[in-house]
Length: 197
Image (cartoon, rainbow, N blue to C red; front, side):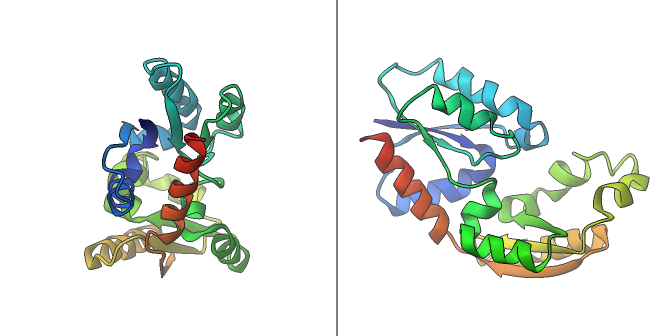
């Protein structure tokens, strides 16, 4: 049995990938998606879940670095055989490293959205940053941004509309880059394979 400790923002995508790979029996423990607003809490949350597992449990962590500044890697280094998703953040593993690097090179002043972030923009970004209470902070947070790029995992038109609305609220240009689940699925498959070696 493999246990995956995963960011709650990946729930829909991870379920789709596991089902597509015929891995419905994987035990997934989701952590709250809003940990991304407090990345210093990610490692303690992962540690708490790991403490509830059997010592010989096969384990994979479905997080990138996600703002921990290397703290997640340092923690996982204490647990040989436990891997995480590659890259600095979900934008990189959804788009693939080369494609994300090209997007960043083209415009460093980019605010990225995934399907999950587009759907939950109000709760995680607008309210999460306090812009609902202090709209005067908008230029402070987003003054150096030029565009919003939606990296979409599905073809849901409502998500594209939500992302366009988010870009308008932020006063930024909007671009849509469909990624599908391919790069993410590949990363999950590699991580799960390594976890059972």
